[in-house]
Image 1 (cartoon, rainbow, N blue to C red):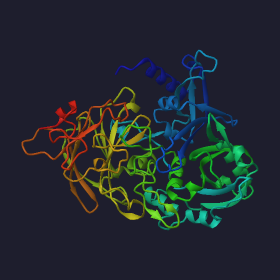
Image 2 (image 1 turned 90 degrees about the horizontal axis):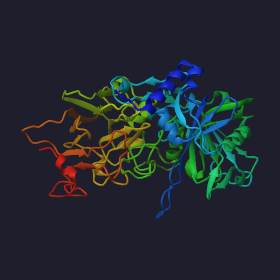
Image 3 (image 1 turned 180 degrees about the vertical axis):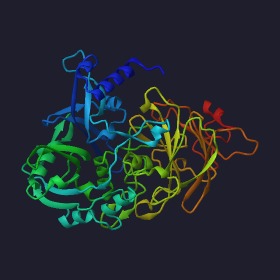
Length: 536
């Protein structure tokens, strides 16, 4: 397969990094740096009625062994790594190219690879679909809560006992939640809360204005909050730090990783979250930030806008809508989608089934509800599309069954098969058959129910939701084909580029039994060329 010069050059750099031949690398890149990849996601507070919600923020940095940090351009880093998020909190090697022509130009990022080359590839990769690297998280992940108050703010919104109870194993507590969502692959045993500790500086020292916007210095906050607790907390036994601050930060809660001098070490690194009062008063945003600490990125829906918080089938997107309320812990977190579970190696191989491109067999598959532990049937169905020259540009679709049931899923929009498109750096976009797609994916177009049919954009796979069972749904998977008997209603998206993100210019064109938002001659989208795509 012919590849571009850029792709070939990047592969040469990767090969050089793997072999550790610095001399060869110099012909391709100016420098190679090693260190810890540190990612930070910023999530805004809920918008007031009538106000637009702020956009998410994202930082990527390389933390070198001496503690110095190199800021990475997020777009370049995503492209250079393929799946940047799977490398969060891991040691990596980065190849930097020559700087641009101007004095202020930063070196370009040409490749990012694991320094230890221990990335594990999933069965999806083995089946010839999208390359998806697993970043296993398992066993005991002990978190500590550090309650830190600014020197000029005396309010203590919650007690130490409240924060300690958040880690409990009862229904609606974090210990119980993470066991359930991980199928008991992880636990929070030994997690505990400490404080309140008084920071050495006022809020204005940690939150300053930059380009007209507040900006929280996450490193200072982590370093000073950790130092205040260092005499009390044994950080050597900790896998994550949840920091609770008694004042607003920069309008955001943050999650990811951070390094600072602690425990007598010049560069102590761990998972970390930064939570203002609106965040720590609700378990949903707190679980969302902990998810970032585990390396999980945001999910999204398919409306094509810049709002990543509009997929209510995943707490890593929309934690506020279709969520269960708790009288003690506020909004509870719903589950994460199956692809997110897969990223952390929580979905056993027996619960996955991959339909590879070119598989012409027609089969019925029992797709069990995602929240069921110990299921003996498939819970993650993967449809492979045509491979691209860059394997990370290859698109796959994942199917899962969700049910409005239980302490975390009890307020979902309904019982249905949910389809996600996975592409680019590993972002999962929920598929919406309505035209145009809804602003929030809790509409009927985002739920595929009994009697409905959907075909992948390139026409390689057809899915029919055949029946509902006590434990999920039965779906039929096979190639689209002409039949003499009537077909179920067709839901077929317009053709899209394998490397493009869902946008309003490439909507899905469904044909369903219920009234659609756009019609022509009784068929949705008939004013557009895609109407001709309807099977007869």
